[in-house]
Image 1 (cartoon, rainbow, N blue to C red):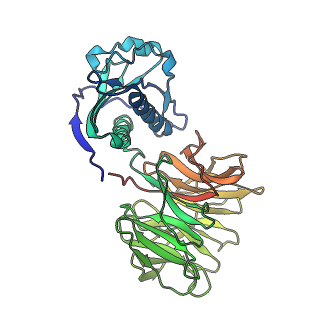
Image 2 (image 1 turned 60 degrees about the vertical axis):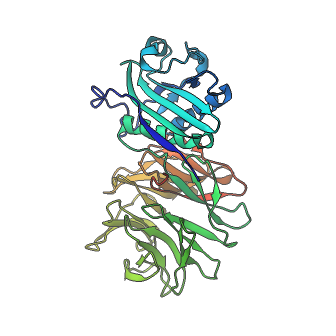
Length: 432
């Protein structure tokens, strides 16, 4: 059981900070802000060891670098003595930091007594020589990642106005055991955990809005059936409908979901309770209707249909049932994922034998391709703040989970496990 204790804020002079926009999230040509993160300093003599101080600073640097917002500067260029203990505003020579190009500076003070860790962290604007965020955390030494994660969320909140991704997780499918099972990891690939042990084909993970429930499809009992797992109690509900059941998608902020059922042989989308009861049929057309994704306000779904002859993405208003076609470029567009801000839909598109990730606005304008000439790239899933997209790629030969910014930059592998990984699904911010 974690015993992490948030102690409180350090003194933060707020005047003059509210009108500063450090990071413009709407800018596709976002300039990375140079940031310095020196090795943390002991608060008291003998209070912490050098290895721990460096590990804490490295962990924080990696987490913030993951966002794609910052250029973390090489410590070899610093005009700074890491043993000096100069971590507070009145003891920092800000000119030393601006000289090496740092626009933001994070300092840390560490104190360890027995198994207790006290961590003081501060974010400074070096040009204004001002404190932006200051926090103190107290807990066990093994809680250090949680402390770093919480402070990173505070940094992103201060610089962007959004909570960021640090309290989120990613569910995905892996066949490392010889069968496809659902796994979960933290936002950056840390702490991988196997969720299902069906010893069958298990796929289509889907998070509820509160992160408590994970829905998925499994062939463990014969034909494909939808399961709903309560992640707190590990209790499961299995849906009982005739025919196949695939692609669950939770209604925002409700214990309801859509799924594709083959009740009469034709694949159509239905609205169901989280307990597996039928509410209503949503789509009704010849050909498949599958892969629903909900708008953040719960008023619309986007889905894939072959009603025009080839797989294309459509949008349906749930109140009026009005349907309009969204994609017209390309003959094979699938796997839509609605952005958390509600303004865009990411999807997979096949052209010339290759699958790539595209993004389009919800009116069907300005489709933009995000991946190029690096194997097949598909199954996009937005981070909870809309700044990043997780996806599957075969650019290394075998399928792996990758991350990129919402504009297609900073593409990098999330993790590498045995077997292949696919179908990433990003959770809301749910970690304590």
